[in-house]
Length: 347
Ligand SMILES: [Mn+2]
Image 1: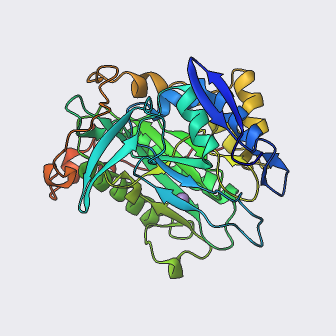
Image 2: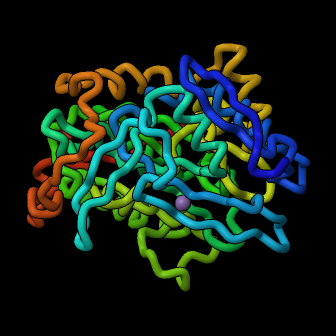
């Protein structure tokens, strides 16, 4: 039985799925079959957010384990050797040579990823440009990580502060409860600045919040100073870094999801992470707080053509060489956070 599985037809693709009854989340009894069902049903909401981006997977081949005994997991960049040949792919040049990443643009690819226990899907904030090279970021992310003793309510408080500043910069941020411990904020960008420039902008934003609210937040990565504070991780805007995609499942003890939320929800005292059933129920009810982000994300002015992803990757020059190390806040979208006053938005 094990390893045999069954052949399923998904949107015209034939896939072998195995061990559908295998419990992946012992705490809830959530099975591999339920994970495949989740990704199939959430596809209309997650696919536009993955479109055109290299997807790094975090895989738990023996299940996620428990809070006390989490199972081993590993990140993979290079597309697995046994992947079906119809999975779109694109190479990125790394210091140790090119790596071919999967592009996730259809339901069969999502199902295949779930089949190989790729529970978490991580992406950069840029999409491939028409020339096959990493493009300029079309969104920014600010990761609000709670330090020891900090709850989701304090993350939400800091998120509201960041919202005020970003709004004054002409941006429209959206919160995502990360499915782990914290909150991610996203805002669509016009795609004019480099990843380094956007990183510098978000770093300034983090420092501004830290200066004005030293009791609530820190922009310092050192774990020693995070106690009682929210760590404002601006660094995930680096072109070489990735963040969990909104609507991806997480490999925590509970089957939580990186779940887009409304700002009203962030004000609720009982704010908590959402699991896959809750997220599917919201999707079925038409709740999609990232809907306003999606048109910008799915169809930027410089949208690459469909099927630009070659199955025969060409080698690409190192993306790092295309970026300058001289990013300044002068390159801010619309205006500098140094010039704006934080706006406190009462719940
Ligand atoms: Mn984080």
